[in-house]
Image (cartoon, rainbow, N blue to C red; front, side):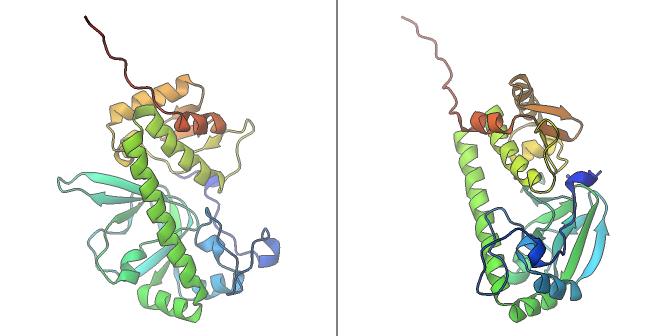
Length: 269
């Protein structure tokens, strides 16, 4: 549902379409967004140039908010490099982690397009570089490039689907399996921004603490620590301070898919 590692935070490139991997053409002349594509990655070169022309670059230090829950909406942000967390304040004042966003992702956008107060806070997890676009300029860009509206809509739909899957995981899985589901998703996202290591391991890009992982998966820090211990014992991950490396991606995915055994019950006569 949070210092930067340069290899994992490569900024999205502005290479011409001919230098990018082939993708299905769309009626807008750009590229069809795949299920894992970030917003910026799905734009073609002219669209990127047009968006840069109305944006201003900005850098954020770790823990710096990009936008605040409850604020009026006046800009959107496209992350170029680095990671951010999306959080919401609960009624009792606790910070609840809802998602993480990384290179190429569009953030702080739903309130702008919906013309309402922001429903969540977005804060940098690592040193972060971004493009900040005033709301009026972004909607003007969308009007000039109507095909990009479909990319924005697709972003909304994918995020709703992600939230639904996470809710299902909360209902159907507990402890180590719930954490395995989350780490599998994070490994897939991280692998899009940095190649696996020599042994095939994937470093989880967002530098999340155990407290933040617990907030995201609705569990205590102690539960996360036990779950990480179980995954280490299975040879699936290795851990360090704010660093998790998935050493067996296939094994972790299989662990996440395996139904949990019901607890044994005592039988007495």
